[in-house]
Image (cartoon, rainbow over all chains, first blue to last red; front, side, top):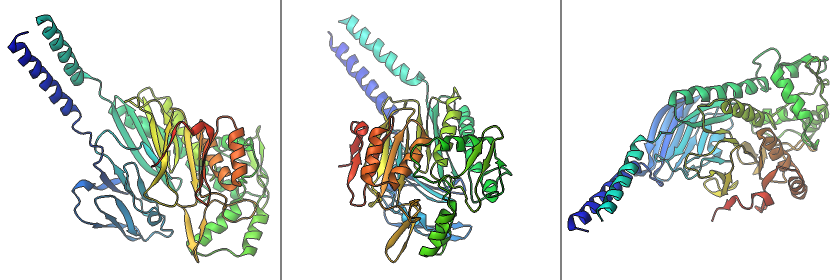
Length: 125
Length: 335
C-alpha cells in the first residue's frame, strides 16, 4: 500500500465523519425549546439555553393577563385570571415533553427539544 | 491493496449517497383544546401534506365523541346534555355514537363506577368555583339522586331511559373512548406510519417509531411536579391512562378536594394518589385507571392481577409504588 493510498483513506474517513456530523448536527439532547401558544397560535419560541435570568412574560388573555415565568431550567405559570388555577397547580415544567395548559384562557406551554431525540415521547400526569 | 482501497471508496460513496437520498420522515403535531383538556396528535410519515389532513381526521373522530358526551354544553339535540334534561321523562333517542358508547359501558365489569353520578359531580364542580366544601346534607341529597348505573338501553329504538333526577357523567370513560376513535381514524390512513395520541394523559400509540426504539412515556411524580417516578416503554397498539389527585383539585383549610369521587361516599376518593392503567383499549385503560383509584389498594391490585390484558402502576397516599408483574420489564424507575 502506497503512501498516497493511506492519504486517500484518511480523506475518505474525514469526508465520512463530516457527513455524519452534518446529518446529526441538530441532535442536541440537552437543549430545550419553550413554545408558548395562545388560542392555537405560537406567540413565542424561547431557547432556554440562551436564557440568562428569570424572565417574566405577560400574555393578554380573555379574562385579563396570564403571567408566566421561565429560566434556564424550565417554565411555570405565576398568575392567571382563570377560576380554578389548574395551570398554576401544574408547577414548573423542566423536561422535554412536558406541557402546562390553561384551558379557560387557551394558553399552552410546551417544552421540547430542537433535535430529534426527546427524552420522552410523552409525559402523563 | 488497490482493490481494497477501491472497495472502501465504493462503500463510503454508497453510504454518503444513501444519506442524501434516504426517504425523509416528517412528524406533524397538532394541539387542540377539547374535553376540558389538551389533546395532542403527533403523526409520522413521508408526506407532510397528507399528515396534516390525516391528523385532522383524527381530531374529527375525537371531537365527534367529545361533543356527544359533553354534559356542560349542548352541541346537538340528541347528545348527553339533552339526555340529562330528559331524565324521568321516558325513553330518549340519542346519537348513534353516544348509544354505542353507552352500550359498551353497560358491559364494563365491576359496578363500582357509577356513570349516573352526575348530581354529586355537579355539586363538587359548583363548589370548586367558590373554593368551598359542600355540606354533608348536600352531598347526601345529591348522592340519593344517583342511580347506581340505573340507565336502561333499548337497542332496537336506540333510546336511553334515565330515572328522574339522575344525570349521567361519562368522565371516567369518554376521553379514552374518544382516543380509540381517533386511533381508528389514523390507522385507516396509509400515509400515517406511526402516531401518538395524548388527550390529557390518555395515550394511545400507533405503529413503530422510525428509529426502532420503543415509545417512552414518562410518568410524573404526583407530589414533586418536576420529577418523574419512572418511564414506561410501550408497544404499538397499547394505551395508557392516569388518574391522580394532583391536577384538578382545590384546597380548603389544607385539605385537598380533587375531582375523582367515590360513589359510595360522595367525597373525593382517598385510597390512591395516582393510578396508571395500561391496556390495548384506551376506553378500558381510562375506566380502569379511575376504578383502581377509587378501590382500596389491595382490592385494586387483585383486580389488576386477575384481569387479562390489564397492567397498572398504583401509588398510595404513603408514596408506596405498586408495579404489576407485566410491567416490571418495561418500567424503568427514576433514579
